[in-house]
Image 1 (cartoon, rainbow, N blue to C red):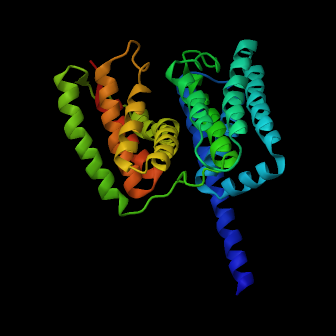
Image 2: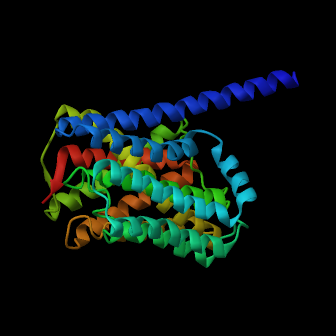
Length: 337
């Protein structure tokens, strides 16, 4: 019986790695289709998609396998050297991408190294006990603020027009996952693609509740205008792109890390949800050029719904699905006024 249980566990683990490869392939195929539709082909496309797949694979593995345990054990053996290897891996990904697409820039290389090294340094100074320390807040800021102030723009310069910006998502997710879940042992962060059927009614109610608040405010202030854009590529590809490249990363940062650390410190769910939501609203400071407080306010309100969903279900996936639904409806039916 014991041997059968071990075989069954190995089969389950193997099937989860199939999910990792499958999701990574889905991302690679989606990026390739988007590039071809945008008339981008040739060696640069092959290299860029390959690097995107290399960076997406660990991100997907954390979400669907038990690799977080293996990474923690690897850091047990490597210690601080593991953080150095993380920085080196980030630099090598950029070098492969930049040389293969002929856009190498030493300043961009330094920015990549700094983005990985700064939170790693704070994590190293905090140690490995898993308790929330001031260095953890600094590490979160080192990951969040470069996005908030567009400091990562212009690193992935192929193809032109900021299409390569999506490379920042798996890049940043890997830095955050290896540092917080692997090195810092934040075992309470529920980063896993998992959803129960009983979560779906709550997600639907939260979506209706947010829309009941957001639409009158957005339309009434002129921030939103009805403008349906139902091209097939948007309807098919946009929800998946939003889920993997916007919703999951933002929910991991603001609900998994920020709200989770606040809950650990404050022991008051309502306060943690509100503070994390306000920070989430502020994170949209740069999205429309000049700060638009209507946008910041709606984002903060949305954050409260996402935060409550995450806390109530214990699932970042539930919050990410709600987040994806809101962003997809926005993208398909509305635009800023």
